[in-house]
Image (tube, rainbow, N blue to C red; front, top):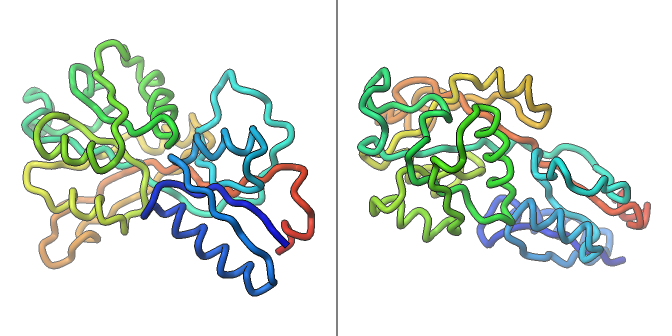
Length: 243
């Protein structure tokens, strides 16, 4: 009659999904304790340590040299969570074609990039993507600020680029899409990423989807998106899993 679920930061998609699960299971007289966390990597840690029964975990979160996690099981994929890489137009190299437009992670060298807190899972994912592009991590200034202070620093010119994983409906994503001088990187190699990394899928932000009237996104933007999965421990009661 009781189960714990690791969600994510306040006002995140994970927290919203957690509340929905709690409401649905309450109809079967099952109490769900929602455990706030920093995000995907933090949820995986809580599952490994036996501090939660269930947790939302993003594809690509597990470390390559990490434990085998034989006592963890997937209950299925839930949704795609696109990776958004916003950058300041005035910080992008002038020699790109078109000028000051990024379409490759290799172009981040020399820039100040925030990739989120370690508990979010995004830093580990971005490290894999940067290494696959043979980017010298010593030549990229990576920071790990939380979302709100990172956005403030980004808009204030203290950061050149900002990376996050979020649903398109996110207020922060919508705000940045409409901010003058801020661009969204087009992952030109989205299909190639999805073939190299099984946890990634190509996604597309169609032209005008953010705002049909102003048509801010003046062309289709290709994105990559890991799949978020609901993970449980093998010791979780089968009756709860059926619910």
